[in-house]
Length: 429
Image (cartoon, rainbow, N blue to C red; front, side, top):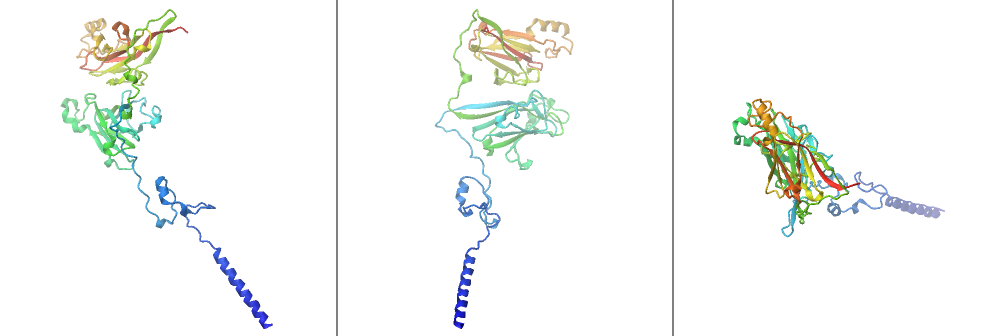
């Protein structure tokens, strides 16, 4: 009986030991709280190799406890500068943007570029934006992928221009591009007020070219325009800016199509009508015809005008029309010239030579409300002078260039245009 008892105790002891060993093998260690393995995943976190994560530039949660992870790598710049390949042919592309109260520089007009105007607390009119006092104008530019881009600013008055890339940096770290105060000694004393602030306005209008690569900017960066005399008016003013870059190939050459045209005359089943009717003001309805690189005027909500030495050139592709006539609605001291090749200019009319001007001068020449000392007619009752130009009369069958300027360039009140109309013959409906 004792032997049987011992045998049973021995069997129970062996079975107990086996159960203890089995229970020990089934126990798992909990994963750390920051493991990247999802609950229920059949793939352990350790299978995500660091090399694969870096090559795809994707940041994932660490697969080991925080105290053993490496520091987060710094954010790198975009790919770097895009330079032209000497073995390839390129042409230039550009976008010119007016900066005014019509918000031509905003997202409404340039949604594909996310808008240029990033922030401002400055004033604006039909010609420009101006940062009087302590106000500022901030533009955002994205040059990612552009080949050798440049930004050209058309500025005047007491401007300061600076650039920066990182919104978190202090203002003291912004890069200075231009400060008009550094050029004060280049201008006569009479152009400054009693506080030493430049007040002449247009005589210091200039172009400032920014090459982003000079500052290591290859993606998004910012341009700030402020006032070099922040206690005064006449602050930094921008009238427009142009973004330029290179693209491969010769380009479409639409503006360079000089295929000679021939006169086109109407047939019996055609009628003459206005085929183009445009207001010419700061809202750019006439942009298709106004040559950007030959426009040095200003505009408000009713007209474009060309004071002093300023001028503007409209280009009409005569080949698109049958017996066209161009009608200009002009006022003030206008001067009109035309050309077929931008080389030889033919005078059409100068207001100073008109019978109306001569009559007004004889009657009111001594009245400062009618005439400036320069001879400029300033009473502005000569609205809606219509100048009609027939290109065929001047043997212009390809392009007609119309140049508007000031017949008294020593002062303001220059040529002002409010409408441009093109009439032509078209097939009857």
